Image 1 (spheres, rainbow, N blue to C red):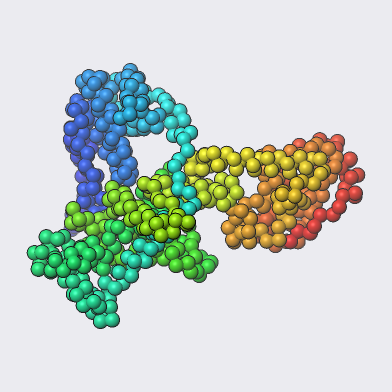
Image 2 (image 1 turned 60 degrees about the horizontal axis):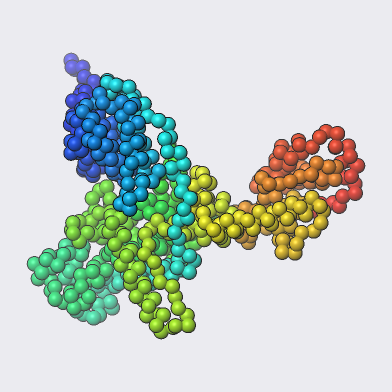
Length: 590
């Protein structure tokens, strides 16, 4: 007789299981990655316990950077609580929140200026997250009623300032120098692989090959410290004579300085946010479903989508030697020796780095990346200075101090300029859910001038259409698109128009009918022209391939039928029918 199995889960009460005000977050393998001690904030014990429990539960599934940012705001509230003499959880009331808002308004930065709205909004937002979680899940922990205001700092996320950017010339200089360093790093790494494999053709000079093999043997193929080389008797003096450990390390695997060149080149090509790019995975390359020469780079963006993350994807032609997939393929090979020694949580990452201080392999820290970028800019400007002395008539610009966040806005502005001011095209590149977010990246005097020019051109076309007079010769291309159905382009997927991509439908196709500033006179002649266009579109629907019609012409027919024609009075249709025979026939749609 078998004894019944007790299948009940013996789960301790949350209070017993999660006691204490220290919060530890582990990775998927159980190793601690972040530790936050609320006992060190100087808060009353019960207040610290309430905040710690809410923090532990709410931020468990979020990114480490998000938790770190929230922790900074909790420390801000702790500073207020000490100054406001909060004694226990009973002092957390609605009035306390009001005093906290007033306290935030009094704070000054290092320059003596009040804190920015977004900083204060973040502080009150983090407090609201913790309080609301406690009200939902542990209401007994808050003896008093506490309510938080809704959006106390409106428009805190919108700034009127123009973001600093690199112009086209500086971007090209930066890319050219990055590609030079990448070529040098890749050639050195390939030589190193040949030396370690015993390929005599790459063993010259003999001393270099011997030193590379000796250094590789010290720490299982990784770049060792100077002390380790000295202790192993690998010839530290010979290493220094051949350029030092950093140069020799380039023969073994990717080094920090070379990694900065790869990072900046990919930042420009992908127009990616700095942090998601740093978190790029080794399996980010996906074959294109249609084109053999194309490869898709697929990565995740931490804030892309509230519930469902939107994938970030860009396709590149691998026949270009410096295309992003080719750079990533080299990165994968150059970091393969590092991946074997990385902790499990970082083993799938692309930007791995051997730390000289920690003497361990891990995901590249952002502070280390910033330092490497500063060194790269200094090397690039030194090269530029030599060029300018030798070529005074063809001087090159020097690179300013830059941080990765500048590149996304700079690339966005170049796409905006190339697209002729089409912000929708930039929104597609940056993968923004709201076009208002895209507008922040392209804001500036040049954008305003382009918009004014575009508005003036469209207004001229509308007036010409109303008056029946031809537009100016400079608008011939736009007028050509505006005639008939705005579909007289012979190849709408050729990608020849500004902002268009080969293989995709032109962004200007049907743009006149969809324009929010379109003016349609309410008279018989214009109604007759619209009816003629509608008849021609409906006839084409019966003749043209359904997929082609839905791709090219269906949007215009829908706008014409649902948005424009219903605005004409019914009594005008009889007059329009009388005008129809006098109109010139429209071209056949293909």
